[in-house]
Length: 297
Image (cartoon, rainbow, N blue to C red; front, side, top):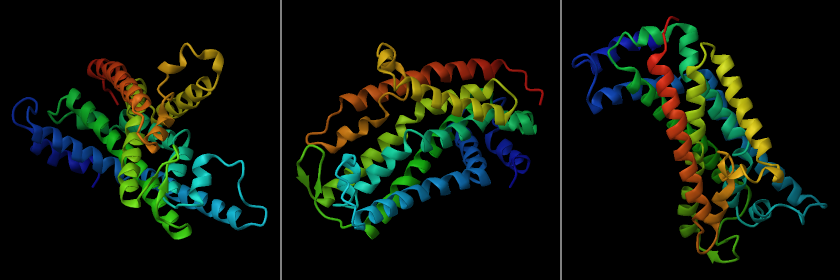
């Protein structure tokens, strides 16, 4: 069902006066945004690429381990642990995907959320329904968070299945040297995946703001992705220590602290606080721009 076909249903679901003031109205918008996001071929392709990444990593580690020259003496701790326990492929895949692949896919989806519809002319048509721009923007942001969860799950679930197929499962040796059972380790893996998804929340707000600045979906997606790359580069320079803690990417890999006994929460709490600050700043900027924007497309 296209956006134009969905509009009468949405309009009927949310009209109870000039603007919808109920949770049902927002849920109708949210369902519509989810449908729009996950039915696009581009979104499905991105999720497919993310799901294929752990398979590729697992096969490479397996081949290297079985090779006569294998052994990985200098391998990062996640990769070295993967050969001993397939569950660590989840953490390895997330550590590889988080700096590049996950933010790029999220940047594409968030950057296209408003600008893409403005470019095709459906945004103005959608606003004919008395949904209200604020609720529409909130629905788009929430749908962006849902995509973060779906993208992270695509990596984590595939990594778990691949790790179980290629490597042994059993007791898990944490980064702190402590050993826990598989039943205790699986909830930690779920917690790590949730934290990774939440780490991308600030990027969703940034992409949404960029998307309100232009009527070109391609321009918004490219700008958001370039911004992610630029911030990642800046975060790698020790000379910028004064500003690095304020970059939204700085604490992304702090999820490794959840693989210690006891778990260290300082980095994760700083990360969540930083993401909340970016949501507040760029969410407000997106609202100010979108609520006053002349939708002429």
